[in-house]
Length: 392
Image 1 (cartoon, one colour):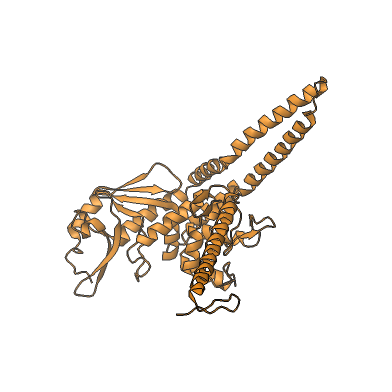
Image 2: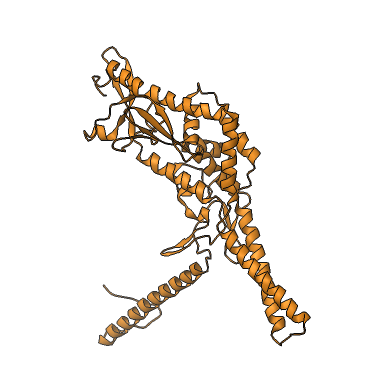
């Protein structure tokens, strides 16, 4: 191999070998030095939480100082995605609706499940700035609350581990929420065919499938109806709905954890300003008094602006809006399977199945509710032949 250069004369004698080596070393040094300077610049930008290039996430825009700002057009769409998925809608339903409305991703493409998964996994939406190993919390304006983000993340994780939930022709409404009270394994949907063509559908403990638990299979329709009956008995009671709305308002009133800190700092700054004004009234003035007073007033303006910015991040939800959403759940037509699924996804956090009871944890209540089922399960066990059926 021979190197030919149009700008540097490289002779054919031994000196040319030395010149070629020097030129190559110089070019390699320049490349390495440039990479180091670029990396240093990107790191300095990251320490200032400045945009470092790449695709801007949907819902954000970049201001003149290269900081992330909320896009007033796209941000409501991102909030809608999170709320709909947390409320029980599937990715397929959300994607079809977004594309039908001619909405597009940050790259200008049609939405699909992968683009939604990237959005739901992007911690920038809760204000977290990340570049390599540099991570800052609350370093950029948040579009969704941390509580909503965690709910969506939990549903993503549970759906990822659900066994064939999206592929099953029959919807198993309690998949990812129903667990064995003995071994704490998830109960998964299964079915068995009888010789006469009758299909039994039921939930079976994953531990029992591995012969690690003796939990009996339970009929699908029976346990789903039990859970739906419990939830509907709660949301059809107006007193319960008002209690739920009050509890949610208490949670929302706590607001941002940063606001009390900023308010405490603002209180101290205003106290210092008052003390300085008293000193000036008493004639205690130095050459630095004016500069110090201006610094305090600037700090006061900065803290007020930060508090207002944090308050703007809080969801603007009233008690009436919460009650409206709860009444919407109570008026669902439960003869439609999709409505049952939406009710369970929105109101039920987890279910534990024991030999004599079902323990249901609701999304709006800390204490679980118990459904006694000892007699029903015993009768079902004595009369059922689903264990004798052959699984497909």
